[in-house]
Image 1: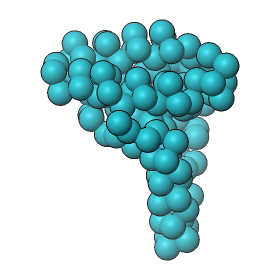
Image 2: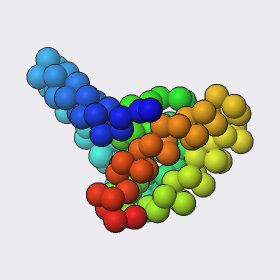
Image 3: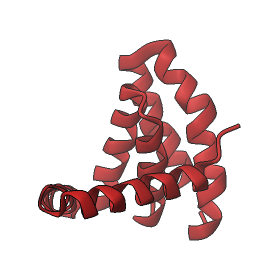
Image 4: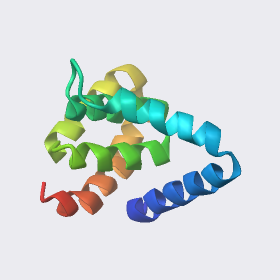
Length: 117
């Protein structure tokens, strides 16, 4: 069983370490992603749901945890997150399904109570 909260902390700690080693690059990356994922013509929740689908397709464990958390934070429901992930399976097949069936489910279970979803 995955430990989504621990994985999220590992990711955040790793990013802090990288920011100390190379603040210019990490600041630029953070600025880009914050700018890209904020509401525009497409609202932030939808952008995070797109990100969830892409992370399932790309099979990036830490990305799944991060974007499930961010989608919930933006107001997405567990059902919306799963539906976005199912779209990714249409493109990624069985390997993508394994991430939906395991890590994504664990991340929703772990983080949804934080946002009462």
